[in-house]
Length: 321
Image (cartoon, rainbow, N blue to C red; front, side):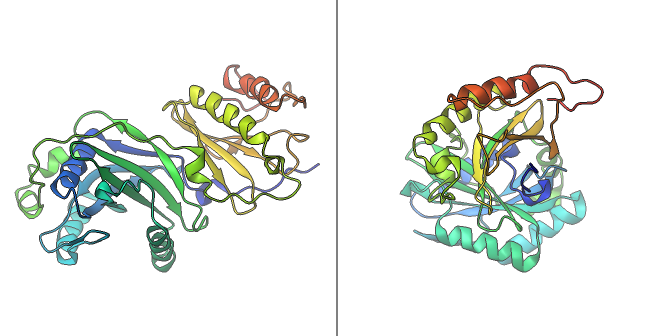
């Protein structure tokens, strides 16, 4: 039986976003400046070949930015000036936006946020974009990443942060660039206070999952099976997390990083009679000596099957993790 088609690698939002600690600290200070109204800014960096955003430099609000309780609009003149200098002098790309929901407790994009991202990506043919949402209490801030792609439309993915310690090399260079350093508005808060970064959770990705009548997750009892699998893959991942995504065909994807590569598990329409599809950086993994064994213990069968890819080396005629 032929395996079903899945979204190609460059069509799917990545389950990971990378950022330097210095940029998290900068954003935290910006959020603390406006604890009761929205604030925001832009993110600059680049995209990896596998669609992972790498944040190398963050900016906050300009002097004429519009801050409201439930709305933020950047100072366009400020963004144009600073953004142009970052692009022209340092070759950075404008890869994302961020704004805060301050003390409202809304850590994920609102419906308006998601619609705005989808329309912006489609209108400007960006391909992909990163949206980050900040929150705060009186003393701490949080920061969550959401990856959008043009082909996945509104099927955005809550991404796990891969935080690089220390100061971004671009921030270090830009602080020595007198013209640019003077143009950038720095937050008044001197000390960042970033709480624990929120890890992606299944319930936040599937707000209203709709499964085909014959799909394995139509049986609500299998939600616990899926959770067991997600938790197990999270233990195998570099970041300790495994994100969940559903594509437009209604197939569930599990996304995590291992040894620096994006790993993806796709449960096809015929699962669990058919084996899960395993991919590494978009390439299907195959082993002639590994067979899928269907059993009543779906989670146990999956663990036994995937473990042979995760912990055993491949041969010349196989692809392995």
